[in-house]
Length: 134
Image (cartoon, rainbow, N blue to C red; front, side, top):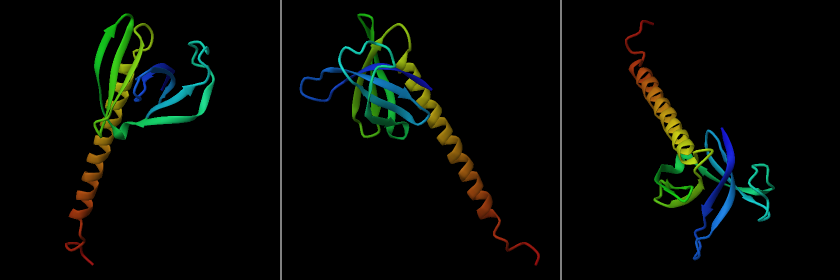
């Protein structure tokens, strides 16, 4: 769906910002470490083979958007309550909006599937075969 660079705040004591190559998919956000600090801003920068995946099924919301000094700061809140902070340049891809829209799309699809399954199970339960002729 989308591919580019974001900065993620580390959860360590110093809370440093680390560049991540991000791939937004239908299932979530995949974060790859960018190898080398002087790799430039191109999305084709070298990637680590290991990726961390933030799946939509475990995400609650995207919020806390703030615009400061040409950067957009936002937070992805997981279902567990864990908050993951990101930032990206204001110009270009509005990652916060892209992630939020993809999350809404995922949750809507899940709601439709749940409703369809509920409807199908009620239809199957209603047909017990007792009132059918043999």
